[in-house]
Figure (cartoon, rainbow, N blue to C red):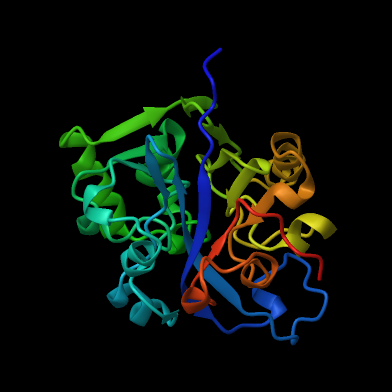
Length: 267
């Protein structure tokens, strides 16, 4: 078995949205309680390779969706030393609008995604008025164009993408939802993306209400715990607590980028 590369792992915050718990839980504890969410992209960096996880949304999409875009995701990546223009591998966790914008910012990237997500986003489920709103047709068409340009790498289920980087199909939130396990100096960290929007969703088994199959969402919480070394090695996809739990990359990047390869503090 080859030696595993050890990756530095970062979360970069690029947007936020003020909202209440009503939008964050199937059964909100207090529908009127304020609970904003944050939007992130992630980067796993070793001496050998760099993997960016998701692309975020554009300024135009932020205006359309009423989100507060703080910076272009690629500006945040540049601040931690990742040049989007040279990134060779981009992992797409799923096709919702906040994860697959900004194609043009990654001109050399191959896009790694699940077979099932492409089929999901281009098939009969897009006729469902409860499922379709989280997708943007131009984003989906953009990914199809990249298929024809031979820049998409399809995966069917779990796969070791590189020594120290593995993809794991979870489903639930979307049919092809996948998470990323990264070998870091503190062990195996799982970037959960939307398999776990908020830590409270998983801890209380009260999911985020954008769901394709709720049984798989709930099973996904268990799978995340199996993949990660401990629950503290799971990184929620939209929780503002991420910026509080983990140390900033540097003093001038506080509130922008944090290190996930360092242990979170206890709140």
